[in-house]
Length: 362
Image 1 (cartoon, rainbow, N blue to C red):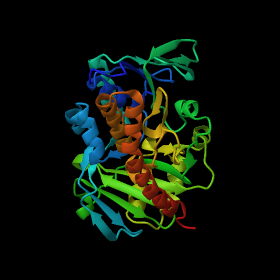
Image 2: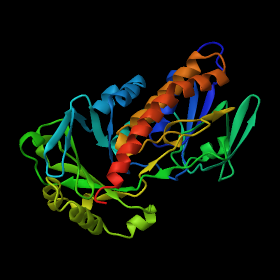
Image 3: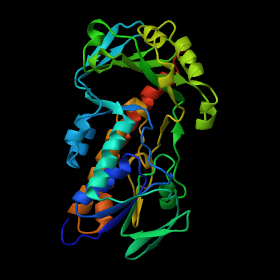
Image 4: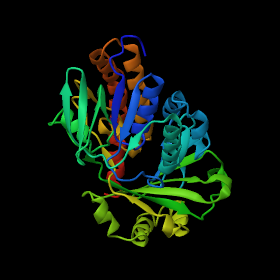
């Protein structure tokens, strides 16, 4: 950071994926960072599977995690678009990246935070902020406070920080889809068994994605199931894994190879994600000494394949702008100017795909 830097200490609100990457990027820019997580414990082992695109991998490499990220998950070298009966409609060799469990990336980030001595405070639910000319103070539900020069909201689609920046800010919108996924003992054959390919098919009544696991260990799969009314996590848990798998099997009964994959699916591996959401355009990304990063300000939905990648890319861009600008207002303005057009274009494309998925079988 240059000699005129105005941020020496940042408070990062949210300890998922974007928060740790933001803290690591800030450290590299010479800014002290501390992460505050609302939950009482860390989130090891929690979450589904996602793909990190090349731009996301580049951002993670920028904070020194290229080797660590390259050691988890598996590479994707091409994307294959199919019809409901398995016929190939298109191959997209330029759509590549790395598919992994959220828990794998989370573990990599937590390890690096420990190595670099970045503090992570748990059970710190933000309830208010006090701003003044030279800094900002965060107030937490447990009665404690923390002071810094900048407060960064990486607290997801239901961001508290977003509401503090702008009480009229929009909240997330439901995509009309529920995610169900897991693993299957079914072994793909022929071209589908080739490594580094991921397959997407719009089935007769639901969207299906799948790919061969490394070493021929089986198949990973997911289904985006249309549902007009959003479920809460509690409501989703009222149905058993067996029930959700039965629903997926019914919806894909006429689809290939979905039917075969689901017939051999491991019930214990089934996970349900009722909150497939998208963030509408947020009018205000920052105010004074508060700014938003990641899903708190731009969640393009899982259909984009870019949610995590955009979040970590924005984290790195914010640190770059803070390092390269002489004052905080110009740094935050430069950050928004660089990122808003990119994320809103991705979100617009994802919204079109969501509409097609949600109308399947209608």
